Length: 197
Image 1 (tube, rainbow, N blue to C red):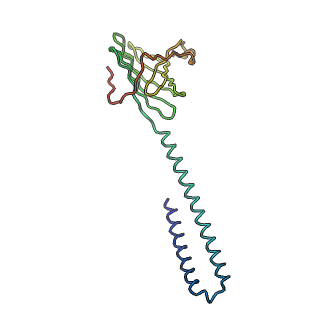
Image 2: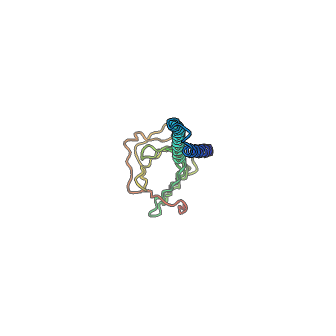
């Protein structure tokens, strides 16, 4: 940006110089042939117009480049959101951080009179659906299973379906056949208010 300011200052100085010359020649044009004066003014005007157009194009290009860079930075910025289901002493809490389509976070299931499952998830968004590996601890054992959540507005609905064991973890047999439970929606919540019991 500084280099464009310098160019503008040079251009302004040159235009001022040109105007002074024009005024000078206009005042003493009786000593000059009118054809020479017109030729001189035409050449000078063409030069300065060309410089002005080049500078405008350069500035426009720089502005587009800065805008594209800012948009790319915005897309790459991580966003963190929290979702909670809480009813009848049953609680599911999910906190996720999304960078582009990659997702990491914490997931806890705390159902009434059942063992609490606490762990982390890592996966990706595919359209409006989150698919992730849930690594958790339950009854002193570490396990891994695939989870899926469908995003609709400010709610997430967990998907259920037939599973099978693959490479030491439980995965969905057919992702396209999942049933998303609308009876236990996880509602978007302020992360400061999320309490894990």
